[in-house]
Length: 407
Image 1 (cartoon, rainbow, N blue to C red):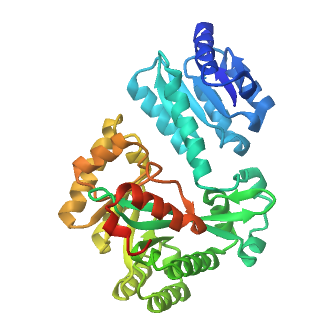
Image 2: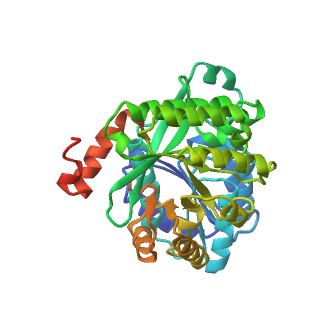
Image 3: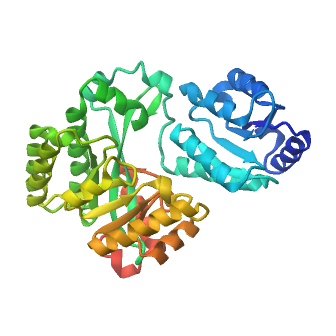
């Protein structure tokens, strides 16, 4: 564990170091210090990807915490480094900075008020590492490496690995479905994640080819296992996909071929739908062919309420940015509460993404949310490990007669 603490108060650094040393042996730990932002940025450049955690104070002279955050965001080599922000600032300021970090797509462990309890920082960091191992994934390739990857060749060679994240009924705790999450695999570097490869796929106009590969592989995985056929299969699709007539025909053909699979398409799009009429026409064709449509990332996409009014969605998914901290962020709590109430009035299922703690799960249950998805239950699971995970989860959470006929 290689940690960098950036804080202008020496006694804060010393106290944190003493607490951290209690959690690790000397051989497991290296702690670096910086007394201001400028010194911290120099150390980040020097240590680079060796860092496992950067703790950043906000209020400092000679380079404040925001300057450090902006520096981390300016270079993709540092985007994966976990960061924890500590400050004596008020709660609203911490929320503002937390929102900025999230929008910059940095790896935020959390925002912490002084005085600091080091366990509050280390516990979610170590838990994320453990859960990452449970996902049984290869190390992610950096964004810098991904820029040189031959996306055309990876797709041609079908170097696509699908992982599946479970969706859990909050009332019964039963598994009701899985969402498909895609990774491309570079054998020499590991997984390439969507935030890296999707822009390249868009750039080279490979969207339709990629979507067909995902749909085909996911349906084949489901069809090979009778147990999986009992769960809904959710696949992401964009508005651009819906403007491709060939892909719509392919989806309808797949629905007829795999008639026993409950297929849900999650419409994900952060920009305005340019050809609204064409998209609505495609959605209508999918619906009359018994393919359900889910509205993904509700509250984040463009003109969300217009879409909700125009399209007969069967499901609304609340974006994880609202869910993950709703126990401490009042604004996010109210957004989630109102979305669940709206879904109930429209008689639409509502799914909460980004459920990572029992506290969040309990709040969602009290609000009447139908389904939850997140690391509290499982990180994304490779297809080859799905049956084992379902067996273990069912044994722990479901009454014996629920899964006996399959196991």
